[in-house]
Length: 639
Image: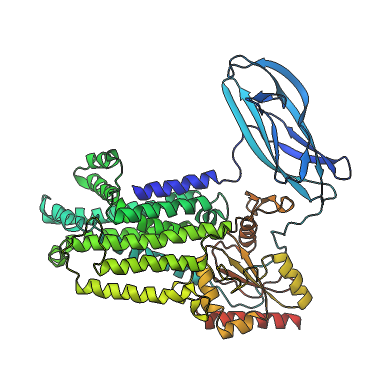
């Protein structure tokens, strides 16, 4: 049930983030130039629903019924006025007070004046209040109004005449990468499920449940069938958690990335994982309200329906152990779309459900299972330390995309070193938690794991230094990038270029092809490419022959008002472009039909596609071959 709550939470977040909400009345806006830097903004509505539109003079507790909001403090606006036939009504909603309203067509106007350059358009929000009988509505409408003589500073979104299917050279991505990515995520989900099996919430249930089916059924064969059905229902329940993500797929082309890199959501996950970690240490138990488990438990009976509710009960009562593992899977794949989420959840559900079916078919295997005991608590505490380490990644994501500059790379490594040193000390028996006993025997396997953790901790130590050994390749992608450092300037974070139009201009001046790097501050695989592939000599030599531009699709920095716009995509969806990430995320989806990062595109100065784009390519030789293929295509085009 915790997983269901988590999915519902993400689903609600998506709905709240929708760029265009349903409003009672649709408004149209345009402008008239009335001075050198003055424009009259005109807002009209047909009011086909015959709502009572409140006059701009009306106020509710000192708040105007009609309000105009601007995104640029350098622009001044006059008071809103109304043109139309108004009438006075006695409101049944506001205790019989008299208000002036417009029941038919009305025009609102306001004059704006610019202090600096005039943009090509102005983005405004019009808030208006309406009533109809006992129904009241106050809606906000975002409008992008063109301005006569304005200069556009916004980057283009759509590259005209771009043929994504026919590059100059037939090399690069061929569609197999997405399939391998799904299998990779499925296997990660499977691994997470197997880890969850070893927790105290799940492991003891295996022999108990299988024995129940095989011993309490009318015959042995039917008991095995019910146990297999039980395992299948576990798989089905966890896989179904991805259904909401398939339903919201058409909200926005960048919606999954918006979810995974949302600052508040990452902070929330940071707090949740800390909460779970402390629970794993045994200081308190996390349980859902009793009515959740009681409701499903009361529906258990004979037959498949009863077996289904038994599986649902297991999912509910085990959430304190499986929740953090599943939450990591959900957030880790949220940027890649609904099907990767389904693949990961299917792997997780299969790993949890498989033992129940296998042990039902081969009950003699139950005798080989280790007995429940203190080792289960050790597993739980180890997971607590892992949760602390993972929690830091969510805080880092929020810090990076919001540019807070709080959790720098060396600080991240320092906290990880403390966490894993604590884990080493726990495994050696030097520190204990609530459910540990002073006389516990430290087994040989536990000591081997402890020394492996110590070696890993020592491996992390160069990460806090400003030396050539600071690139810890084994964990590339988890800590912040090398340029996000407490040291002065180990790497300049402002390079390479971060604007496509600037790169295109430089490409034409120098007659060099462009390497577009669609990346993200919170992208793990992007850091792996930058730290483990781009640093190889053969790759560096080839990249120097390109104009490199890195476009961050998760950057939350707000664009200047002149660059903000409401864009209509190729499939007719309206998208508000307000941040740097909005712009480059939409640029990627509109032109290259891709939403994942990293995503690499090779373009000529005249904006022809040189090769098929590629994604995550950990093989440096394969990446170098792709870069060389692009250079060959560019040389051939110049002839």
